[in-house]
Image (cartoon, rainbow, N blue to C red; front, side, top):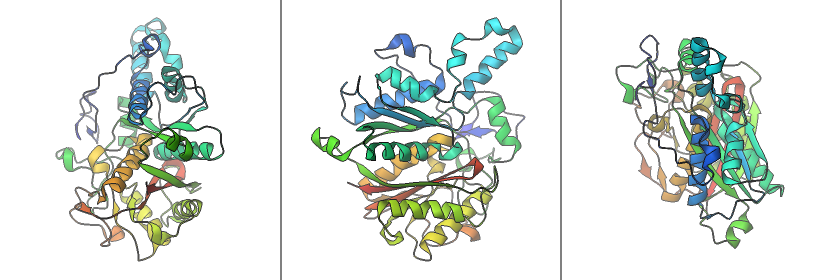
Length: 375
């Protein structure tokens, strides 16, 4: 996290972001297609390629019914802003022809499908900051129903453009701790004042169990439970009592056939907003009572790339399960009374972990919860 370098944000209330400053997109074998991609779709294709390689597929997915389920709050908005500026300055002839096929909601998923020759369903959702979790959950439902053996699922976000970034600054959703960027994201802290917008992508390979075993895959974790609900309350503010977020957690546990006591760790959505963190903790208390498992928030490590955050955090949760380690919640100096409890992990620590919950919440009152189990 540092001061914005993508554009001049000096007039904004919030002037810091989690930028990906070194990104070299490789065209790959289908270069005639990928050479025309905007940054959003480049992130999607790059993350998908990395996921497929890490899963041990060596071209075997090309031409198959493998699915692509991606979530993004804003899709190709950065490219749209760039092209709009060209339009205002020089007219329509200056606008790139690729704009029309770069800004629609399905661009990320369909570009991945084209780049990797994946012929199953290519589905996108735009459920704000819960998008990545919903993509993973819905992909798991597809696999359970027999609609595909393999799915690439997760979230992608490139929102660091002047108008988009400025709009979040205007509603005071982001931190204004501009003089201390690295400590600006402060989940659960009494001095938290908003999130730090970031960009990034997180894509995971979901695979039917027998299919994975049959090819000798290294299985890192099982996605055994998922649910989503809506607050039906407000476009920006969460329900203060957290009852619908709690219901999403409860339904995810039921989907996994588990009780709250079976959860060893919770990766919180916790963006560092005053209302959001308090509402999430109220929801967790409603589900787990006083017997909460360890909870941590990892956004101080990677910022908040909106719809990509849940997939990135699911990957972090899987790493926590694999390594038996509860991640730290950085920048937590003085825990807020509304979030208090010895369950919140400040420094990280080693602990045997078998099953974890990863939560995600978004504008419009969208709630999503994933249950992951170590393999």
